[in-house]
Every structure is written in C-alpha cells, then in structure tokens.
Image 1 (cartoon, rainbow, N blue to C red):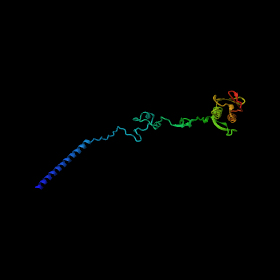
Image 2: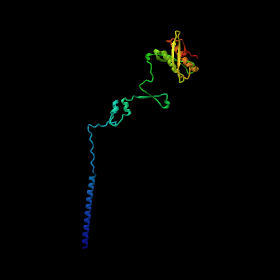
Image 3: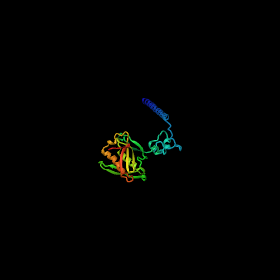
Image 4: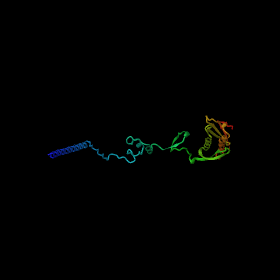
Length: 242
C-alpha cells in the first residue's frame, strides 16, 4: 500500500516537472522570436548608378581633368576645389620664371627676371665693326689690345664709352664726354665727372691715370680709319693738368 502511494506521488512530481519544463521552453522560444522581430532593421538597398551620373576619372580627386585653358583654371573646377599651382602652370597663366641674383644676394634677396627676356642686348653682327680697346696689363706698365665688336655707325663713341665704363668705380665716375677732332688730326676729349663723385682727376694714382688716359689715347690713335694723330683731355673745357 505504501509502495503504491509512493509511485503515485512520484508520477505526479515527474508530470509537474515535465510540464514546467515545457512551459519554460515555450516562453523562451516566444521571447527570442519577439526580440528578433523587434530588432530587425531594413537594410538600405544599394543605389544604382544611372547613365546621367558622372563617374570620377582616375588620377583626379574631383573627377575633373586638369584645366587646359585659362577659363577652365578660373571657373570650371567642381565643388569648392581651387586650381593648384600645377594647373595654373599648365594653363599658361604663369609664365616660367627663372631666378637672377641682385647686389644684395648675400642678404638673401633676389631679383626675378622673366626667362624669355634677354639679359644683354647684343649688337647685330651685320652692323658691327671690330675695334681694339687698349687695356693695361696686370703690372700697369703696358697697354694690351682687346678686340671688341661695336656699332658700325658710331664706332668711336662706342669705343670711348667702353673704356670709360671699365675705369668707373664707386667713388670715381665719368658721367659724360665730348670728342672734337680738328683739321690737324688732334682729338680733344672733354670729360665731365658725376657731380657727387668723391674723387677728381687730379686725385688718381699714376696707374689709374695710365689706365684711363692711356687707354683712351691708344684706342683713338691706333684705329686707321679715324686718322687721329694726337689726343688731349679737358674737363668742361679746361685742360686737365696731370
């Protein structure tokens, strides 16, 4: 009798445990399904590229090729992109430049000169003539001829100007001159110093006098076409006494 009652109690306990497990499993399944449904989000569909949309070209961040003209460099850049330096150069907006040194190069400054402009105007070879300019040697004892090409129409003036340019300095500058040749072949060279020149003709050393007056005299007298026999020098009409 006791065994029968025990079996009945055991069966009821097992039935309750089994029912409780089934209920828990059902509740867990419903909860999981509800959470999955509540967290599901519709993913955006990929946008199809239509034929009207421009694809960026390779090598360009904005999809625009570098400008080929000034107008493209100024106004045809997409978005907020500004033309870069290489774009401006390729468009011809900035001509190349090259860099020339000034007198204050040691201070870090420089002078910019357009590359396509000549730094020195050369005379036309068809309109020039060779003239010997006489320059002193290193020991300042002899005058050596130096052939140069000058303008054919004003060869004498050009030769005198070149000699004076060689002798001018920071404290001694000949600002102008005049040449007069008389019937006897005597050339008078009238010289005029720059007003603020710190040195005068009389203050020149023997070597400086030889380089200035000797070079002018030999240059004028040794050209056969000019037929000059003697040269004298004046300053504003007054004979220079050396």
